[in-house]
Image (cartoon, rainbow, N blue to C red):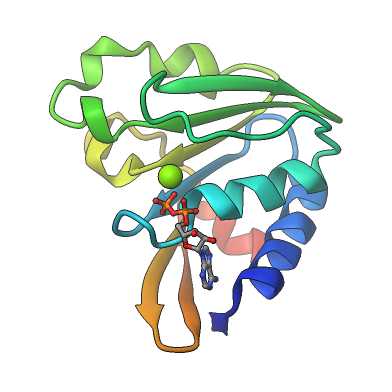
Length: 139
Ligand code: ADP
Ligand code: MG
């Protein structure tokens, strides 16, 4: 589905309202394709009041909302996944959103929802790709 920025954020907000502890969302797409913008929408849905900023340099940022949000951008550690203790977040009480999570490959859990972002002239084309039984049912 092709969405402009406003519609995409609304969609992300709705997703954020549904999310539960332990949910993992992987955002896949080129630089500038809308991954951080989408995460801001998720943050609205989780009731987070703080401004969500790109975690490119910090790797991970935590926010408090209805549930904690662990927002990661693993672009810089893609070739060295051991530099972050991913499980500390994945098996915690919050929601994990990972920009460039596809780079972590085998370190990802069995169940996660991947959202793929592609450029179009009218906005971004989003493809939802469930990995594992949980997200097949979820959609
Ligand atoms: P990423 O995190 O993937 O690098 P960002 O979320 O930072 O990308 O977005 C990059 C730029 O694209 C921003 O200027 C943002 O306003 C714009 N943008 C984000 N989503 C959309 C969209 N669905 N349609 C058009 N522009 C968008
Ligand atoms: Mg980003």
